[in-house]
Image 1: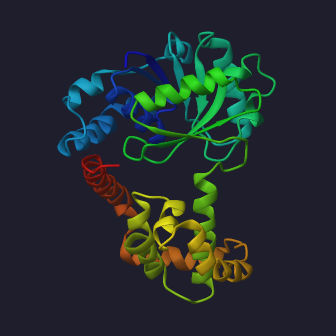
Image 2: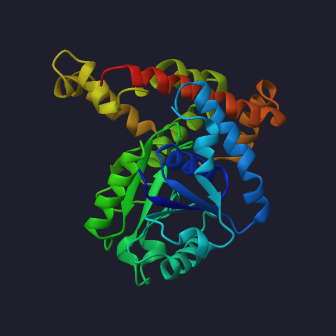
Length: 310
């Protein structure tokens, strides 16, 4: 790839996006309104890219990849000549409206403007902008340079051409884009993740299992299958004759269970209990180290998946 990409926001997600595009060969301009965030960026990027090199996930040296990422002094400088802009600023509607209004004025007419927001639909921050046809959500999974899914969630007025071009850019950058056919808060991943969290909290709160054992249900159970196939393919393979056969065998049980699954209020006392259990296992000052351990385990999984047939 030889496009220029602008990354707005030099925090965790912004840096990860910079790696995605630099690894793919793009020149990346990264900008942050907070100078300290931008100045701290280079070392953190080098550490992450070096981890990729150790696992054989890049064919170039970390220095070559890192050299494609250039800090920009102003928003206008970052946007100049960019084919796609990836915004990663504060998660509020007001801030999104402000930054997209600025970017719509400053970006090249043909530039695609995307947001990494986890929850806010495109229509809530783009409706009154002249360039609303070129704006959409492109929601990643953290960290996107290891977890390739990106959810493309256009507004009703986002042009088909914009969506098509965005899909092409993310695909060529090594991501796995999925398209939301209509807007919904939380998009796809966070709604499915939310359903799992809701039931895990209910089971914990009502005394059915510890937080450690509920984590094991995912990491040593469902998560193993879900790392290479989704829920529909799973049920297709879990009955001799496929999906309908599975539904005939187990559908009534799932319906009965669903009737007992209530919304969870994320009670403060419950969360404090979980926090206390977690801190016995992992001290607060070890969170950053454990996050890097997680990322390295993901790298190992990525290496494994690349070696397998689809």
